[in-house]
Length: 465
Image (cartoon, rainbow, N blue to C red):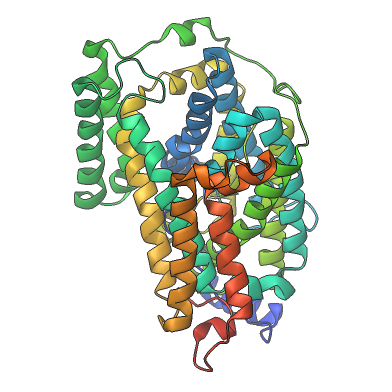
């Protein structure tokens, strides 16, 4: 989600014209062909590179939710394990396709950060089963949007999608800084050793991201956390007891956490799922343009969003959180110029195998909270900056500035003053406490009711990146 972009799908252009353009490209460079299968000696390392670019981000969400919900070590390991397994299955569906499902493009799937501000209060008040019950329904709603995305695209112009992504980044930052201090509920919260460890990870991550090229830049977060773990060892902050206790192999167990269908949780997560479709459409477009050097077809957009939704419902059954395409991997496709969907499918297969090994999940869960915090505050800041980039495609007239301003006011102000809705029913309180739901709804509703200028790009749909 670091580089979320939106692109206009032109209904006037036929799939045959897209195919003609693709054939022209692949005649010049087979690597730009999404159906090209490179030799395994090249395809395997390229696929693993995609996994390394998203591995830490994929594991961060279950670690954050587990810490907030106060889960045991075994439950935390299970959530991380399922995050890897489901991401692998979702990536295989997205790249190889099943019937109408899947964009059949080099898209890497993973756990979405966008739902975290909504899931945290639900997990704390109603429990994880309510989160998974809401995600099950929300995924189905997202699949419906994919099926009817042409008619519903009016809800997601750049001013709405950009505001939505900006809000996600801003509202996640307090969570990131809680990890910088040592994690929620830590007895030594804010101690100098936590702050120094987070600062080290922060500096190393920024240095590799900005001053290195290629894979070293793409893997900056992974490198930063590895350096932090090495530095944490002499501090006594690394605990590998969970790794020793975890098994070597375990098949996923559906309904291990359970499902609960709470109306407030369903409403909140379903609204998030529908709004998140804007990010999915942007990532699919970015992959087609940056990798295959063409616009996505209608089938690719529809199948891709449907795969996101049904993968999220599938994830809920196995104790994993909603799935979305990973934008850092969209950038990696554009950077390497390798658009083969089979390369990414190999990476998806590796994720499935990793999800079957509990020891790997236990190893990831041993990352010190402060080390994770030094990296995630950069991730969350990048999410916010991606929202600003998306907003740059909208004209900043008085109409759009009002949409952004009101959405920011509700999203940031309401969670800060919970006493304003203390007497409201619990279902309403959960929606308002997230901040993201009232902010996102405000941007959607204001975009629909406020008069538009004739030259406003929002009248023509999502802008090109």
